[in-house]
Amino acid sequence: GIYLDYNASSPIDERVLETMVDVYRNKYGNSDSRTHEYGDEARKIVEAARTSVASVLEINKNEVFFTSGATESNNMVIQGLREYGMENGKKHIITTAIEHKAVLESVKSMSRYGFEVEIVDPDKSGRVSSEDVISRVCDDTLLVCVMHVNNETGIIQPIKEIGDFLAEKEAFFHVDATQSFGKLVDELREVKYDTLAMSAHKIYGPQGIGALILRKKHYKLPPIKNLMFGGQQERGLRPGTVPIALVAGLGKASELSVLECDDLKKHNKECKTIILKLLDESGLRYGLNGNQEYCVDSTLSLYIEGVSSEALMLATKQFCGISNGAACNSNSYKLSYVLEAMGLDADTIESTIRISWGRNTELKELEESFNALLQVAKELV
Ligand code: PLP
Image (cartoon, rainbow, N blue to C red; front, side):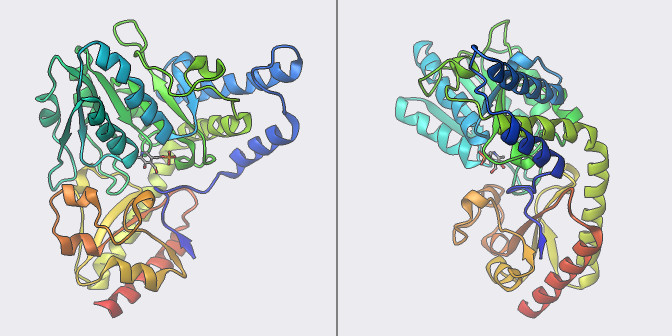
């Protein structure tokens, strides 16, 4: 079968795996051990990986903190600013209706502590408007959370404009860059965010590792409190033994992402062209969700009229790994809240599938498999 769910998780790169196996096999020190060379060696691995992650964003390595992934990084920012917000009378948070649950649920939980939460809707284009976000910022605003690329639609959000505005303000700007880190490399380097979240497994790295980026604002690091208590790892912000093989994998995946960014973009575009051509030739009535002008090359959110995504996924399960939204949300009887927020009607949402591809997607196999999927769809209309 063909795997077309790269936005949920991507296959690990062989070179990343080799790096990790070498560490697992030969480097078994604890990076916090200071009394022997095994610790020194482990520490070197961790610091080299920190540099690799920082290079993707062209930031300082001391701004990189290792975490278990984007869910943890997002929560560390949102929950970690709670004390500061309460002590300083900044109890207003702005986010968007299309964030991943790791942001949306975390922000919503802040209302239990008396925070006022404002959730900005996108329009049919799948984008929130930067003016809509900016106009809500006031003196009490603690935090603004806007993702870079939406995981369900692939639509790029106007974080550059929002970041430029917030750079002069006291409010912190958090970007969930899980779907863009190492992919929209130049674009992300231009953005003035204060905090950023990423996960290695979206860029051909291992699951269970990611990073939180903290940038200095007005010469200070954001006043984030640690959520867990323990040792001084990651400067006390994220205590617990650093998993050096995972960290090494993240470092390697980060390096490769930059080196191969342009080639991958080209490849992904070719894949998209094939899919769109097959759709056009199929004679099926289909549509694409979101304004495609703002869509990344590796994702399509599409619906085939009269074909439910449930039926299509079930009928193609043996040979096609597609989804109808975020994996964490694929209790698939529920309609996608992202597509609902865009104002799409229930029929469209029920017919929508998400396909996402990447480095290992072979053009010929894609053509055959997607064609087979379309044949199945024709029978389901
Ligand atoms: N944010 C976005 C936009 C995502 O696509 C994901 C992926 O599932 C996450 C956050 C959560 O990442 P993880 O499950 O690795 O913590």
